[in-house]
Structures are given as C-alpha cells and as structure tokens.
Length: 426
Image 1 (cartoon, one colour):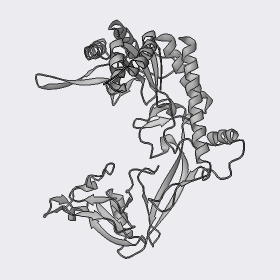
Image 2 (cartoon, helix red, strand yellow; image 1 turned 60 degrees about the horizontal axis):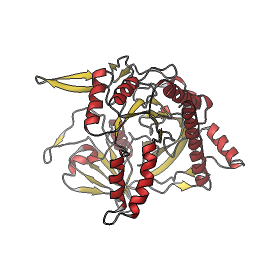
Image 3 (tube, helix red, strand yellow; image 1 turned 120 degrees about the vertical axis):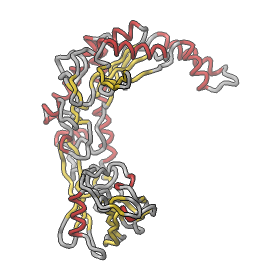
Image 4 (cartoon, rainbow, N blue to C red; image 1 turned 60 degrees about the vertical axis):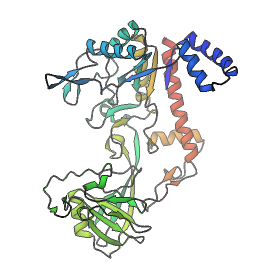
C-alpha cells in the first residue's frame, strides 16, 4: 500500500497510452504500455532497501573477511544510490521502521534501533541520508514502515513489549495425541496456529524419505545434540528421528527409526497419519507410551494468547489496530516522517492483521458485535473452529464472511486515517 506523488507526466502517460493502444497494430497492449511508459519516464523501477538486512555487509580484503556498517554510513548510502542510478532504478523504497518497531531515523515518537544481532547500530539518520543522496541523483525516495508490527519475537524488543496491552490476541490451538495410559504428546498440523516445534502430523498423502533426520521437512529441526549410534548399512544416525505410524483407526501400526528407511519411502496407511518425532523428550514419550497395536486418540485444546506468547507466530509482534493508543502511535509516526523528511511517497508494509487467527481479543469481539448490530452467540465458533481430527477441514461458522469484511473495514479505515494524516501535511 503506497501513498505517493502523482506527477503530471504520469497523468499524461495514461492519456497517450489509451490512444496508442487503439493504434497498436502488431504490438499487444502490454508491449505498448511498457514502451510508452518507458519513453515518458513514467515506468516505476523500484529498489527495496530492507531495514535490517542492509545494516552491515561483509567485505573481503586480502582474503580476510570483515563486517562493516553499510546503510548507517554516508558512504554506504551513496554507494547504493549510485548502483541504483546506474541500473536505471528511479525509485528507492527505504525501510525505516523494521519489524521490531524500532526506527532508523531521528524520532521522538518511536524508539531508535540501538543494536541488531548483538552489534551496535550507529547513531545515523538513514532516511535523511537516502533522501538527500537520492534526490541529488534525481531519484524518488519513498519511506516504508512496518505499520502494525511493533516487536521482534527473536529478540523480545519493541513497543509491543513495552506496551503488552497493545498486542494482538491469537486464537491458537494445542493438539495432542493421547495414549491408552493417559499420556499426552503435543503435536501440530501444517497451517494451523500450534507449536511448530512439536511433532508434525502428516496425512496419507505425504511421503517421508529416509537417511536424514527430519526427512527433509522444513521446520523439523532437532535440538538434541547427543551422539547417536550409526546404522552401518546407511551411515545414518539411529535414534535421531522415529516415525510413529497410525492407521485409519488411530491404532499404532508401527514405529520406524528414520535411519532404517534407507532410500525407501515411508507412507502412512490409507486414512492414517505419520508423526516424525525428533526432539529427545518427544522420542522418550513415544518409547514410554506407544505400543504397536494399541489405540490412540487425538484431542484438541484452544485458547487466546497475546501474540508474544503464541508459539505459532514466529517473528513479527503485531498490535491490535483497534486499541486507541496503538493506533495513535502509528499515526504519530506517519506525521513525524512526513513533517520532517522530504519523502516522495509512503509505503505501508504489514498494514494488516498478522493472519486469519488474529485478532480475537475481547475488544475486537465487542467491536465486531457493534458492527454487526447484534450479540455474538458463540465465540469464536460462530466465526470458525478447528476440527478435532487433524487434517480435517476447518469448521467455518455463519459469521466468517462478515468477520472478514469487518477486519477489512478496520484496516481500510486505518489506511484512510494514515493517508489523511500524511496529505494534510504534504
């Protein structure tokens, strides 16, 4: 989402383009569009300068690698602008409010980023440097902000941590597999808001390949650092990953060490499940509670957690746009940037809810009920709920469509207020 200048040449480009398309002849509309826009200099050729990824760069001198500051130096900014100019880029989008909610410009509204990954960040106004250097080179410079992300979960920093009451509320799920003796192991299902570190429940359309722990599945990283016995036939470590196999009735059909698979694939029985288990504690649970031929069952617990505590939300700590102080904070940032910097456009990154499972706070529920004009009978089931059996379709409630419309309305109103704030100044 971008708010920027509409220069006269762009408006002219639209009029000429419509005429040219009628007379195009052998050229199709897209080719004419590109050619006319390029001739008028109205093509947008953008370079995104990420806030944290470009703070440093590694240089090699005489075979020695050294990490140096980059976008936080005048020389680094000048080098980026020069490269963009040479590559015929005409717009630089500078990320000045990364996920953490800490900023890379002089602010009295938001906290300045002081360190990143243990390295001090120089006291340097990144936005001012790009505006000055970019305009000197004849380039447009837009400022980008991660609008509703106000914290970084890897480092537990940002306004969302200073103001935990701002945090978005996550409708989260704790799935488990329960043995006959009552022992329970937490598991998770792809694309659900559960703990991604727990064993993944795979359906019969998934295939595991042997030899390597985690079987090449993204996100199944073992934290067990113990030395494992090696299968002499395959050179694969024994005991690093076991695969629990359940049939269609959730009976244990087998427990297979990944190292014993070799090059043979492992597929769940029709209608059944596979659970690759990698963490030491989880493997111990399988050893203690799972017996071939015995039945197990899946259960389900749901709860509402602040986003900083929700294991399913990996990096960005979103805030609720309906909280007045959080909303005002975003508007104050926009007002500060537009007032103090000669930017050409404002880009709103993450001007949205984190995902479908946010925001299920009491405040948002009450606002939704007012928007509907009637009470909500079952919360959150009238919006949606999760099926007990893993892999089954989410159960959509009668209010799912109105809920999505309501959320879109909230974001649209926030974007409208941001646009009005910016345009009232410039």
